[in-house]
Length: 118
Image (cartoon, rainbow, N blue to C red; front, side, top):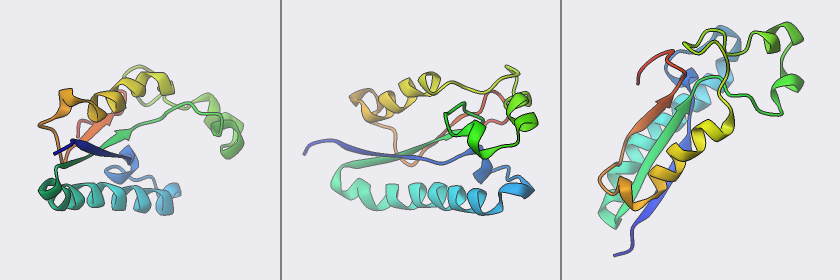
């Protein structure tokens, strides 16, 4: 049977929600829950299901969705005092899609800059 992988993107917000991101945090919590549930169902068909839960990540949408003072402080609450760059998360997704993760399913990998272990 061919090995398949489903990788979702949830967020630190699923586990440590901010009061100003209620709807976003709730959808990310739903994705985390779906990942865990779907892993149990999909395993019967040889499909691995995992998720990555980033903390603050610098994307082109950040300046257009936040106040400028918030943009300047994005990621200051991490151990690295900065947001992640998307490339810093890419290898985690590649690992989860690869045969190296053949025994990994139902997991949520935090990439939170040390804000919280999952």
